[in-house]
Length: 626
Image (cartoon, rainbow, N blue to C red; front, side, top):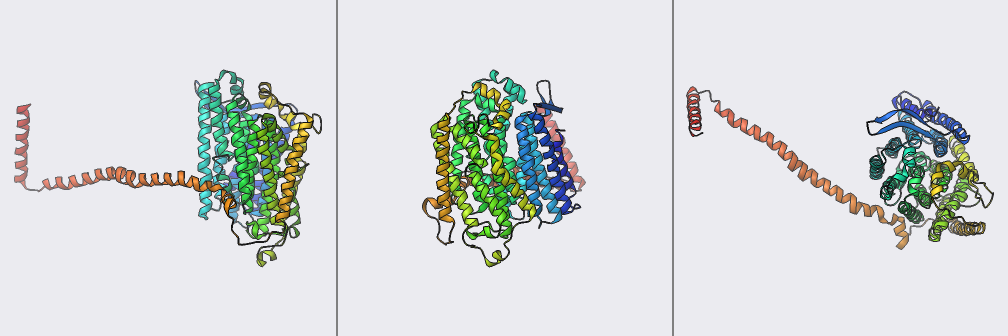
């Protein structure tokens, strides 16, 4: 039944895509949501089967077959893939249901097209995590890149949205080149791209090969999972519909890089240089994105930079060898980030499209369900106990401390900023007095059940989702996720040196991080709960942060404009004057020559006799001298 998991969303894509002009909105929503729900049910069955010890590789056909290389179209079902299957299909299903209400104003054919794209997105991500080799993974990898382009630019009549879609597509192509080169390197040195064969033969690869391959794979991860320097596409991806943002940030695309490195864990464990690069880049991204989120006023932009920051923590975990911690945070982040994005969508829906939090305020009395669920999501991402984000983030910070206390200190700083900007967002949106227009206030209302029910489910998961990873300090042997994933990371655990913290150290680290985050939370609440809108502009560092450290402007100056200038030069000089000039010149020369030669056809017999005599003389002279 495993093959049905990706095939069902693919079927939904075909039905809605090909029949978009004929299916009704209701049927399109049922097809789109129903196929993903069926995939979720099968994923639950697969998860329970894996939990019972049943892991295997399913071979369907030979995708590439030569004398020297054989690549099968194979799916791998194990502990890691089964966890991701539940995240993708479970959270993906809730986002599909939410979309049926959020996109209700679309034309029927556009509504069906939207669900077709959404289904294709889920199919591509499922293919990525189910592939038993790097080539099948790469097919899904490219698929999610394509779908992000289609969905970010879904409202294609807005040219700025098209620019955002192209930006996402092109920046991901940069990362994808690194992934592709790593695959070629594996073929050349390992003779295979199959996970089992590559990981079993890792000892035969040189340190240089392993380091080169892992660094190139990380370049791919930097693109998909938005790490420095390839992170600027993700905040711009907010151009798409809000459910798309939730799908990209929570259940699909951005988790691809985390999955790929977690799957390749033994390669990274054998490459300490690559691990250090992953940890440093991840931590730097976490801090940079958090500083930017402090001064953003677009509700979706705050959440977007929050995602970039949280992804940085996941890479920090991977870099210090805490692979279970990274996967754990992927799971909890999927719950609370999907909740926050869908909550933001509910607010935008009620505010008639308004996204600036400075024009909101006091919404809790109009939107009680959205308010409460959003608050729970904020507490989870801020790392407040006993919410899910506390357990996963604490595990990452503890692993960072065991590796290097400096990493822990910087990580705690990021956690403090996270608590601050999330409760700045919450306070400015839901507390105080309403700052919008009278027309907006008149139309304020709670969202329909198709929106609020997914919010409630995700809020429950955000509260209790961390219980699968209760640290040993609280309950001996309580980390069920670590025990479940142990077979996937067994090879790495056997090689890597373990740094265990004492219970007293764990309690101390938890206490410091929670206390610091709580202070930041309360400060933000106190400062912004009675926020009054002013026309005063940001100055100094505040303006720099509001303008995102001017990184986009820097890229525009040193990359985009020079490339466009070179393209313009090639177009105007090399292409038009050079290539076109050469091709058109041949045509003009032939045309001119034919006009002159035709004058010889005068119709006068005397002229023809003269030409004949001259021709004979020329031939005679040539023959005489040769």
